[in-house]
Length: 386
Image (tube, rainbow, N blue to C red; front, side, top):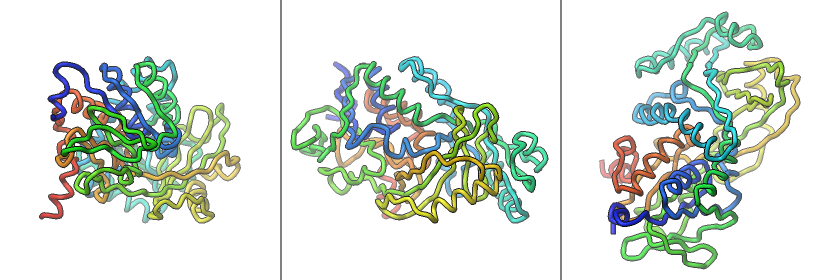
């Protein structure tokens, strides 16, 4: 039985593996649509990469050469975020702090300027709505930037959301819509019989379901029971981060700002998030002196006043990376009834609305939305064959 064959008479029952922003967003929207939804999380909901993120919705300034196929999906999801945030706040009664001040990328040295100009030229060639600023114009927007700021790129459409507030709201929205959240519930395996996903094995107990959505982020590859052809090639990409406390009445920074070697994200309560390293260290979750030094040095060069601020938190997380830095979305030809929604790398927060919208449509109708048609698991097999 295909996904589409399970929907005409009644809504399918759905098991979602993973309670990060992707899994909870899908679960919430499916529950709203009348599905019987159970979300399974091996630890605490929202305490993986979704908690470790900074909440930047940067569909424009983060675009790099080689990522052209991902640009339309990211920009579409960014356009969905205001409506998604409003619906989530209404469903949960909790704020998510969507902020629209925009994002700046600053250059400090002559070399920085040339690198920024090259990137800006590429991004402008993609039709992205960006503006070149002089150093003086950048400091008009953010007076506490390094006085030697030489130039900047301004992106009014790249905004931010408080990702931890989003996770708290999604928990409430899911349960209010009738979904069930199971924490400390590690999925041992997907139960596959005759080429179809028929349920899960959790704590040695078999749980039947019509559809399984695998949204376990960096842990997706570790879920048992799947044939090799159905395992998403996702790996953990370590990122270390920290935060400092600004005076919320007189913050040093109001916009999201990218420097040559890191980014700074201000929150309404005065928290300033500084990130983030990118390390191929497997599951090593240790915070390192070198990582913290790199973050603080990068922040200080952009915003010198940061040296006076108290450090409030340090943490690391694991981005779910694929070799092409794009997500894995859609059905799996090797296992009917299995849907993948993983591998979002650094774009998990940004891509949550479009991922939820397209995966819910897939579960309910069996239709693969054209927006995600190029991001299926089969692209990796095609690449090997080519």
